[in-house]
Image (tube, rainbow, N blue to C red):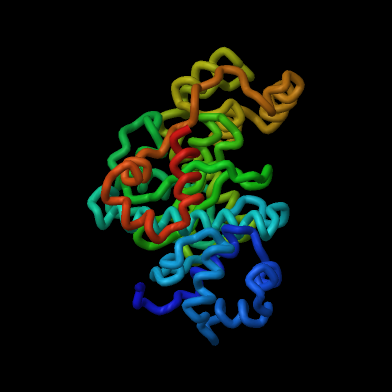
Length: 341
């Protein structure tokens, strides 16, 4: 029998994984909504029999409710207004399970120690030059050579970030992150099978972990800053400036897309930001791309998105048996199969 105390935040996590409200869970468990609220607030504890009932309804091992849990904020989501609360909370709960796996994998020496640098942004109105310098500092600290980043996901995992890919089941949730101090979590969607977009998404989330952490989140300005960081990290100004065309030269842009492993849209924006093309030329290019349907599906496909491997290797190892005994099996399965797809 597990002798650890009932961890109230685990009940909320399990409920959100199941997509249930407190009232819905209470109804299925034969309890009152007030009782569920008290269990989650810590003002009351369920009996062992009630824990068993809740575990069965929520499809988690009873031991899940007795695991210690590290709290974090609601997560960096691009479109808080468009992302439903249910979708956001379920995605966040899955990220918590990924963090659990990373912690256990690290203890088993199958996951790297976390060393994401914390370089807080000076404010919501931070100049673009500051963001560029921050991206350059992270590349230098992590020993990234000049030119394209070979594999963004592999780089994140090598520095202790738990990266998973999941079908996020929402058009408004492309990727998100949670800034745990030991092993931050980055979740990438499998819904849009685009390598360039996935690399940019992963770097965008890295930006939040580096610059925003637990301090600033949930506002439009931080998303703009994360976009700026991602562009600078993937396409350093000193390396790409002279390669960018000064006119709408699609053949050159196609070659740059292959070399830098970024989208045409990102290249055009970078050319505009670095002053290689004017605002007018940029708008002309965007309109031309839209007319050709390239805003939806770009030419020059780059292949399948980069895949995380560290947690998958842990899940395939004998050491994962203890984690499997206490974590939700359906979530572990979804992490394993989606990330391997």
